Image 1 (spheres, rainbow, N blue to C red):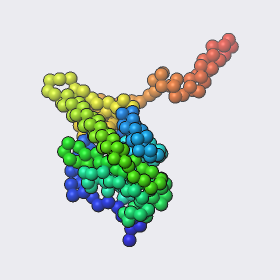
Image 2 (image 1 turned 90 degrees about the vertical axis):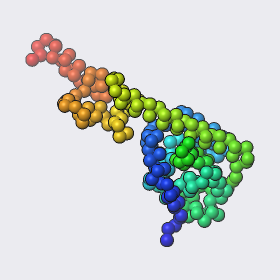
Image 3 (image 1 turned 120 degrees about the vertical axis):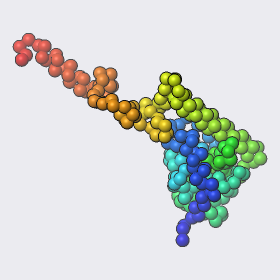
Image 4 (image 1 turned 180 degrees about the vertical axis):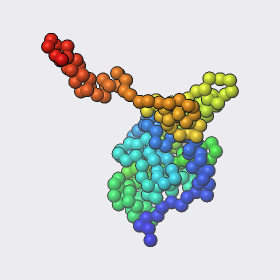
Amino acid sequence: MSLYYAAKKLPNERERLDALAEFRILGTQPEQCYDDITTIASITCGAPIALMSLVAKDTQWFKSKVGIEATETPRDWSFCAHAIHSHEPMIVEDALFDRRFQSNPLVTGDPKIRMYAGFPLETSEEQRLGTLCVIDRKPGVLTSAQTEVMQALARQVVTLLELRRRALRLLDGLSTMNGERPILPICSYCRKVRDSDGDWQYLDQYLSRRSKIGFSHGICDHCLSDHFPDVVEAWKEEEKDSSKPGST
């Protein structure tokens, strides 16, 4: 028998995961707009931990986090996987006395969850992607004012997500317009290009699969100076030595 109770998958789990994939957000870098919201949630509720948690197929992944270092946990351990079963917030006042969670590794071990309050992130299509949640290491409950603020913050997270999805759809539409110059979505961080399937690839990989262009690889002067300064310095010394009178 399992030592803890993993949440059952939702009846519309396939559709829910498809909806989550549309946002192309899993694994992306932290963003200030989401970090501001989790910070406000933590301060408002007086909770040491606040998370924007997205429930994926096998994990719960944290787009934004306050108070922990982990970026994800197994879905089977996830409190948020339970919370997305309802439109309403899920409040656990003391996980040690809740049969669903009392043997959960996140309760018996770090971060030693006792109080959990999760507010579903529900899209306009009624797909619950995850939660905005606050966590404490001691038992507790939210006041009505704190609950109201958390519900408002959860709505703001969904608004940001919806804006992201609209922007992605606009880029996709522009890149396929007939007669127009194609637009390639490029990551601002790693400079990879996103293809029509939503996969990210290096530019040479992207072009080699769609054209007859071949590639050779080298290192430009700028990158050589930035990443291999010792080599550049050694070359300079060799040039100095070779230019001295009597050198061969």
